[in-house]
Structures are given as C-alpha cells and as structure tokens.
Image (cartoon, rainbow, N blue to C red):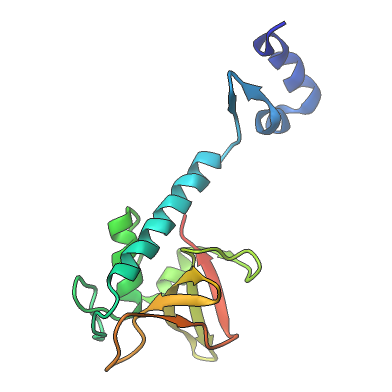
Length: 157
C-alpha cells in the first residue's frame, strides 16, 4: 500500500501536527516552519558575509553605509542587502528579533550589548565568540571577540 493511502490513518492516530512533522510524503519530509527557518538561516548567513565585506569601513555615528557605518547601521545595511529590513537602532533591532540563549546562538544572530541604561551596541555573531561590528569613533568595521558577558542574542526571522 502507498503512503498516501496510509496518511489519513496516520493523521488520525498520531494527531495532525505530529504526523506532519514525522511523515514523509513522496520523498519530502513535511515539517511546519522548516522552510521559513532555512530561509532565515540563509538570510543571516548572507548578512554575515556582507558585514565581513565591509571590513575596514570607518565608523561614523548615524551612518548606514555603504562606505561608513555605526553599529546598528552595519547590521541594518547587512540584513537589508540580504533581504530583510531591520529597524534603525540597536534597541529597536533587539525588539524585532527572536531572543535566543547563548547556548542556542549561531552565526548570523545579532549580539546586543547592554547595561543599566539599556542596549548600547550591536554586532553580528560570526562564531567562536566573535562578532563583526562597527565599534566606535576612530575605529573601523572589524571582527572582534565578544568582550563582555552582558550580552543578549537575537535571531532575525
């Protein structure tokens, strides 16, 4: 008997959601949200690559590229050119992301630095405890180790 003939019985026994996440239909596994997750991961990977391509670009407060950046300007520029529009400020970007734990972070996630006054800096996680970011006046876009434990992570969806 074919899988298609068994599908109604499986749905009734396992429940619609579990059957859809487990059953393979004509060679394709059906998993709700899987294509959205894959698309978001591809956008994040592309944004990370774009940020890295801006290495050496000077920091300028309020700048959003293509040749000068502030921290949230770099993240906004990188994601925009990867296909996802982010808000302008680091705090607004934090509010626009799905928050993830340090253990769940992955390359392409945003890293938000915070203190008592709120979020003051953002970069794009590059893996191995490093971020691409536009640090401060007089500096350039660069890859650097995360220097603080006061960080939160956000995933662009």
